[in-house]
Image (tube, rainbow over all chains, first blue to last red; front, side, top):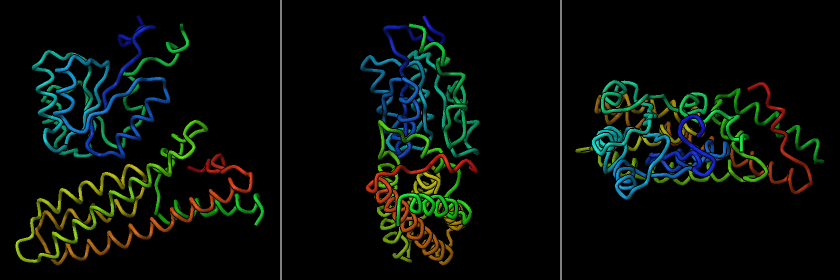
Amino acid sequence: MYQNGSTETTPFRVLVVDDDRILRKMHKMMLTRLGIEVEVAVNGKEAVDLHLAGASFHLVLMDLQMPVMDGSQATKELRGMGVTSPIVGVTAACAEKAAFLASGLTDCVSKPLTISKIANYLPAPSNHTNN
Amino acid sequence: MDVIQMQRTWVEYTKSLYREGFLDSQFAQLQLLQDESNPDFVVEVVSLFFEDSERLLNELTKVIDQQQGVDFKKVDAHVHQLKGSSSSIGAQRVKNACVAFRSFCDEQNIEGSLRCLHQVKQEYFLVKNKLENLFSLERKIVAAGGSVPTEELNFL
């Protein structure tokens, strides 16, 4: 088993939750280029529904302000369901960071997202070459 | 214009976009996501930005034009979205115009909001024109058998 839970047969999976399609596309590409499997959700409710349907992820990247269900509510629901994966908030709204963290996030980073900001939650690069 | 000349023009034009504040380092981050397996990634993302921005600007015009009983919560939500997407592609002047706009939304200032809407539109259409010129030059370089010299942008 590699660092962060992935193995040779279970690729590292990340869920990107953001209502902005530009950010979903960019964040997905950022991670896919590292060999990471990425799924996307357009709001908090979709993220919760994915987990209810049995999906699991090594990392969830959660935007805060989204229609239908925001990132705070989605995080509370995921934690309430027993989801223990790291959930990292990604937000431009610095004023709401404390409340967002209190909803059950593992961490919160500011936009724009970069790989270096979430490097601690991703598999170490050398692991991808250890087959 | 030969390929080398077009490449030089591309480099100088790109540098001017950063120097004049139209683009910031986030656009460079976007360019870094493009490679041989995704050669049109930047154009795809920027096209989404153009679509989303024009939709939001139309919505903003409709809401603010009402003058009486302007729903500033709606205005703020649209400006927030536009600020987010402009920031994510590095359209710095559009983003800055949105930041100013949100202050007037907070104050529920119709006159200020109208001025800001005008400013945001101006900045948006400016950067749209600049980016379309840039992509047009890129297409000409590739059509002439050359490659876009992104490695020349090491000043970023």
